[in-house]
Amino acid sequence: MPNDNITLTAADRSVSLPLVHGSLGPSCIDIAALYRDTGHFTYDPGYAATASCKSAITYIDGDKGVLLYRGYPIEQLAEQSRFLEVAYLLLEGELPTVAQMTKFEDAVTHHTMMHESLKNFLHGFHYDAHPMAMLCASIASLSAFYHDTLDINDPAQRKLAAIRLIAKMPTIAAAAYRYSIGWPIRYPRNNLEYVTRFLHMMFEVPSEPLNLNPVAARALDLLFILHADHEQNASTSTVRLVGSTGANPYASVAAGIAALWGPAHGGANEAVLKMLAQIGDPKHVDQAVARAKDKESGFRLMGFGHRVYKNFDPRARIIRAMCHQVLAELGVNDPLLEVALKLEEAALKDEYFIERKLYPNVDFYSGIIYKALRIPTEMFTVMFAIARTAGWIAHWIEQHETPDARIGRPRQVYTGALKRDYVALDKR
Image 1 (spheres, rainbow, N blue to C red):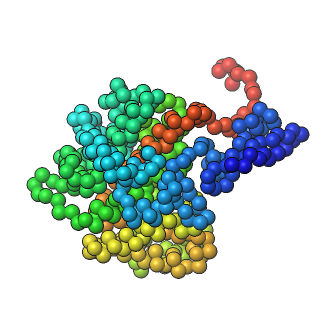
Image 2: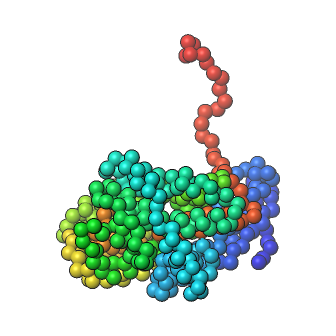
């Protein structure tokens, strides 16, 4: 790697700062000595131009529409892999052999059950609590069930926590949903593979078997692959920030779930469905597009554009094909889905959106697929959390394997009052 520096002048002081080079992507200026040598910090709202860590897990080139998991293009993984294999890849850094994959699947399957006391924990929530609230609290509570294996300095215990989280997240998610609608909680059927097992826990009732169309399981598996990781997004950065304090993996991932819940992050696909409901009818799409182009209207199309991708989101290209396959295979007849397809067609042809590269993103299509699979809108972000758990825990482990990792501690630009003296209450 090149070992070059740049010189930065701040007021009357100059400092030579080294460049940090990764294997792909732009170089970064190492500003660790900036305050010491110049007395100045940097100001970067939203960390849009700041690298907070070194990571070997995921690479994104937003200008070219590239997404790599451990060097493997997302297009290849989506076409040829399965979610659990991708989870192994994120955790271990390499694709597994047959023996390694069998061992990993067996380990995940062995840990799918949740403690019976968690049922009582769920019963403490109001019946109509949002599933994300129940999921976040339940995952945090796992640290109380497994308090004897929380040594974050033990690689074996870190790996066991990763297996437990990947295995139990679908079980707890399905249980939260079923509790919210008054259905009995279903135990995992460990003779089924990961995604099919989850769908059975979600929808199977004791009175009759679940007839599951294979395209439903494949579509959900694909969504899990596409959502498994996405570099240093808000929730992953949250997991790393909390983890940097030495917090246990369950608390760290629960913090990630809380961050994911935000409508600007994981809640975006839920917002897409609400927008489609607001439009209401395919004949209103042209009017909605016109309103979106009017800055004074306050109306915006959800599920279009992306902060990182300035090209077509590569995940959206993949999921678009699956979306149309699911709708055709399942024979879904839903007015909102008709609105979505009409909106997609209009936006892809409209010069306003083309010029601004406001293409439909992964949230737009995932919401449509979830609805076609009859997954309730309030569970959309939960689906995201199940998938992203693989990435979160991979980053948490990587962080604890990094020798020079430090506790996260951003600085600020203070804009408050100058120093002033206290005045007694009776004299104010």
